Image 1 (cartoon, helix red, strand yellow):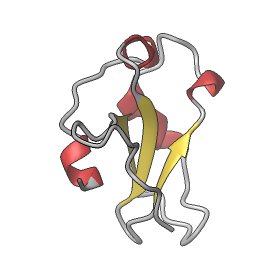
Image 2 (cartoon, helix red, strand yellow):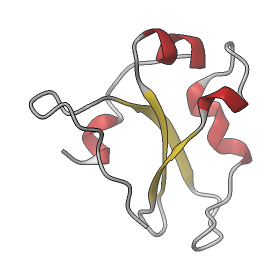
Image 3 (tube, one colour):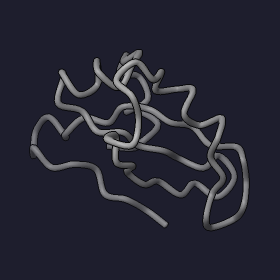
Image 4 (tube, helix red, strand yellow):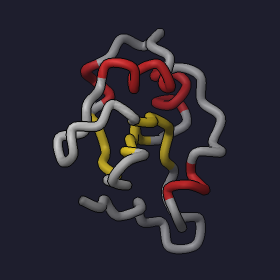
Length: 84
């Protein structure tokens, strides 16, 4: 399962994401780094996609970041692996 496929999960806010048991992920469009973020840093009303506006990739310095909700793999039950 790729992180590209995961972006199709529709979550508007952090609260919506938490209620559905999802995690907050980000991906750098420049270097393809994928990581999870602690959602507790954000208010429940925070829009998931808007979080990316204030982020910079620690690996390459790009501001071309996407934030989205991530679900466990349906068949295995594992979370997708992070990549640096």
